[in-house]
Length: 157
Image 1 (cartoon, rainbow, N blue to C red):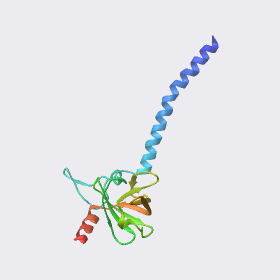
Image 2 (spheres, rainbow, N blue to C red; image 1 turned 180 degrees about the horizontal axis):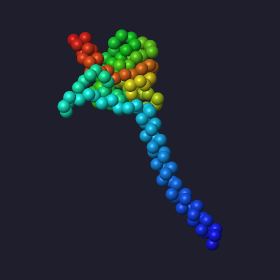
Image 3 (cartoon, helix red, strand yellow; image 1 turned 180 degrees about the vertical axis):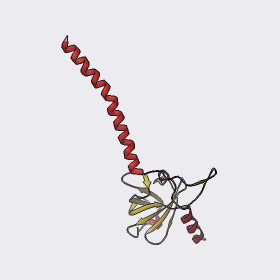
């Protein structure tokens, strides 16, 4: 009888502690996300309109899908400007000239084995030409501010 009561008490303690372990694990994940992404930047507001102060938008919006590229422009041998389908313009610095980039039929970008590319990542630009692919190393990715985009647009005219 004592063995059954002892076994029941151990089982009750185990069941009570399991949700606490799961909750602690979830809190740890949230903490890691805060460290990874940092605090969100909210643009200053004037009434109900956001004011563009030239700073980058919210950090969570500084990522794009490397398979969803709307357009690409090259500036010199080692700089590429990429527009994501979500609308952001990103600058990528290449380590080399990236032969084949000008003849590419399709471009994708990968970072750490993922299609999610964020500002600050080093990445790989993949230029597909017919049945082959040329891989070009990217040392840095950053989203341009609206002021930088305006300067680029006026320089292109």
